[in-house]
Amino acid sequence: MTATLEASQAVVPGLKPVRFHQVGKAFGQGRKAVVALDQVDLEVGAGEFACLLGASGCGKTTLLNLVAGLDQPTSGRIELNSSRPAVVFQEAALMPWLTAAGNVELPLRMAGVSKAARRAKAAELLELVRLAGLGDKRPHELSGGMRQRVALARALASTTDNTGSGSGKPSLLLMDEPFSALDAITRDVLQGELLRIWRATGTAILFVTHDVREAVRLGQRVVLLSSRPGRVVQEWDVDGLSGAGETGAVDEINAALRTVISSHAAA
Ligand SMILES: Nc1ncnc2c1ncn2[C@@H]1O[C@H](COP(=O)(O)OP(=O)(O)OP(=O)(O)O)[C@@H](O)[C@H]1O
Image (cartoon, rainbow, N blue to C red; front, side, top):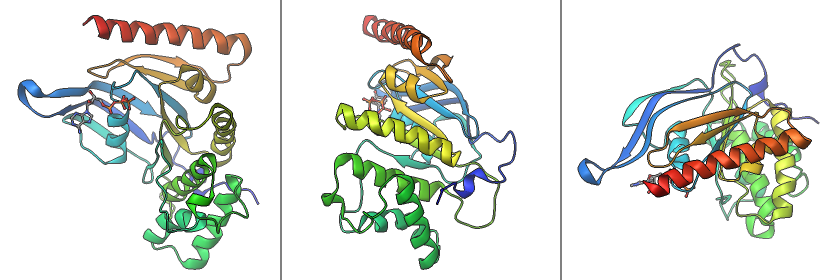
């Protein structure tokens, strides 16, 4: 069985899952205000894998929270043309009392999907993340990497158009440093798995990381954010790079990131 998700069918051509128009976000007011984001213009195309790169505290999580609707911008506008965006965090944040299958079914249950349909969907998604046969395990019985696979399957369940209305809206997955708490070998494996799943599902992904190598390996496009306030400094098309091309891009982006960090330190 190959999971393709409804997201890959009948998407209106040219529809961008998310567009930022001069978005700003400040926390607090007056002289004590922290300007986290300033005049951010950014867009993610349907089915695109975009990586958002920046130093610690540059506003990456704030930006994802705005897309997810967990917070509101203080200026500018966010245009969302996707089915409900789903977030995968650094920690899997699974419900400990539910099985792996129960966790994946949860967003489907909340969307009013029938029991038989959500069972079938959860089984399909668990197979997609290579956890077939482990659906009855509880989170504490799984490794960190396995828990992130469940979180990914749950996010895919959540961002799929479950209304059956065929809205034609592309799906969008938001990932906030999802592999940074894992050991190097597990991280490497899951990066490969994520690419496979992205190709199989056709979902757009906005992936936040501070790891240049990870951004270049995964993304088609890498967007560098400056720090305090977070602004888009530069973008690179890194689609399909390998070998010397990939190494060259990593070196160039690393140099740009160092410049951004040192200019902030000198300010
Ligand atoms: N709720 C809040 N109240 C006040 N300041 C906040 C709040 N949330 C974030 N900030 C500030 O906004 C800036 C951006 O924070 P954010 O968490 O988005 O950065 P980040 O790039 O995700 O950092 P990291 O990589 O360390 O997770 C920081 O200076 C942070 O202190």
